[in-house]
Image (cartoon, rainbow, N blue to C red; front, top):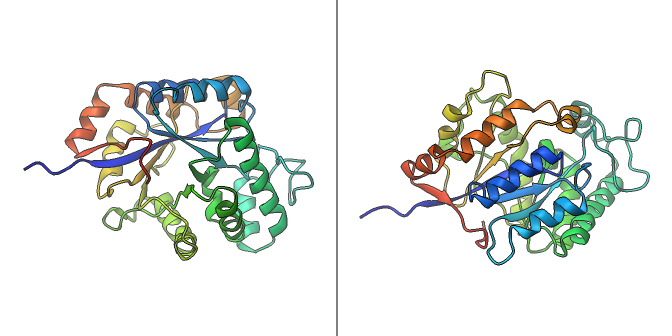
Length: 284
């Protein structure tokens, strides 16, 4: 008797960053190659046309879960008034944000206000709260941020689940430095979410070194190793355009990810590993 397929979430991050990223993500959703995307409401191409184009993909048949990609790092700007600390009106760069959070020098009320405003912007644009919430550059796992995040989210979006970024136990290779760092940062976030009764994905995958030689076709199978039913894999597909190049160092690798997901090899790989994309109406 054949074992039932594992239903997984494949979430395309950064919707709103650029038209090229948005177009690639919508194409993958339409082709049923990803089943979730997280939206950056502070990004320059979170605009009415791109929101409506994304919403249209769920008309009649729901193809993708839509979430909020909470953003608290440069080069993006806060939506709330008087957010601090900041750098020339922008959020702090990631390394500065991490150091400041670790030293517990962030402003708790400012964090809570910004998280609430970004949630409100999502609600205003889509007409409903996000189905899930995660963090750009995993900022929601940081000290102080996680406390404000887990205080605001259950009130503003009580039915949403949140992204925990811990790998499955039998997939915690020490060579993946990013994955190991997230495993460590994630422990307190996951434990607090569970104490508060906030739903999370059971496991996470998708980290790799973003260098020019990265072969995503060879990397992706390791994300499936040990991933349980309803586990989540993050990805960053996109087409490179001038706006993306200006805002983010992750450029051509986005096109490699897109090419892999749109290829005939991707669904065959899922099937060979006993996995399939979850139906977007299901709860992770």
